[in-house]
Length: 348
Image 1 (tube, rainbow, N blue to C red):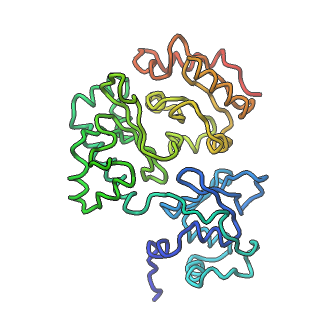
Image 2: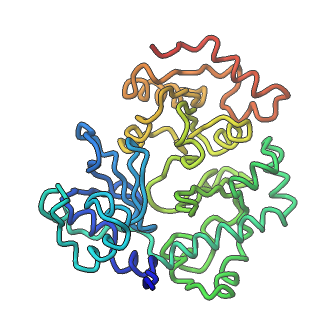
């Protein structure tokens, strides 16, 4: 009888970033991921290959394929599942079937700051407790509904509310370390919840939350209206939009939620700045509709995106509103927005 293989233990024992680097793939830090050139296709030098150490996974946005550390060795060394596990346990001695270059180290030996297992568990627990909290706090749920976001979107996007007194006791009940929640940015040093008083929207990768951004429901002009957890801001909505051919780009959290509720694939910059990694990620889409805010900053950001994305980028003039979120409360908001495409310049 074949012995059962504990895949979780294999992944834990063999960090995917180290395994990938040993096969001659140079990686660099990009937010919570590591990126490099994909070994499975000729990519012209673009860093399409993404490694996610926190989930021990990889994905190429050009190949549209991915997996875990075991599947990586299976594919690159042309091995079966059990042979790949043995290859890992032997210390990755390259097989004759592998055509990769000799192992090389990472470009930098500096430690990449990525959430560890305890931090990831705390983040997932926070999303759970905050989501339940939103459904239990009428004033927070009423705010979301006033913004035109329906219950289905609340559930699907796992929206939450941070009352400010729920997380620590929940973490202790789950036997999760409070110190890890501090490292993840969920708790301040004095124990206060970082996003207290805010409706929060999580961003997911491979079904697991990687980041949270919150919007205060009682804006008084003193505290920032939006606040995200520490670390680089990811594109909000990636898991919902990445499989589509066309996508809409918006600035804000509620712009994204509005389009999502209308069944329109969308990504939010959560601001106006598009980093190089963002521009590279958008290269997978055939058409990119730009519906940024109708103000000077939004128009400047739109021009920047058009310069970098070329004719695939199609600016959409918002009809007499500042942003997409304002259309959420219009009776025919979706139709009004889509009608703007009739006057938008189409890509060649």
